[in-house]
Length: 178
Image (tube, rainbow, N blue to C red; front, side):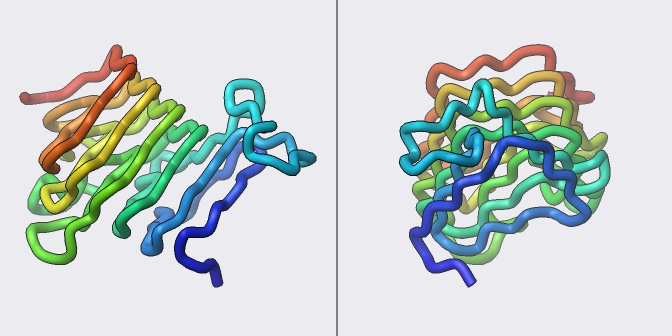
């Protein structure tokens, strides 16, 4: 059992999923560790790539709690299951917020130093990243969003309020509409 506000350090490697990671507590996830570090500042997320692979079967991660940090990961191979309505099938790499129009507001999410590439859903909104309607104050900083595909917003689809994207590279994404 992990306590709220804990830091989770993840060692470099590829982690292939059989089900979506659902973050339902205020946690900070940091990738890019070689394994011998004693301080977070010693990690090198560019050299020690930490890959979360949805195996073209499941969404990589869904964040449904406020004040979460996701820093130094590559999200790839995510595939949100097609559902009705379409926004349930979005965010194949990263989905922030509850799925739907009801529930608690998710605020204060920080996605930093992440690569979100090669994710997709034919009907979903935001093949790479989707920020849900009930999300506020989400920050996406120093990230690459590339080669994702979705129904609307191949790379990113934002419904949330006060979403900041800063120093991000968004390239080579495709959408069937929008």
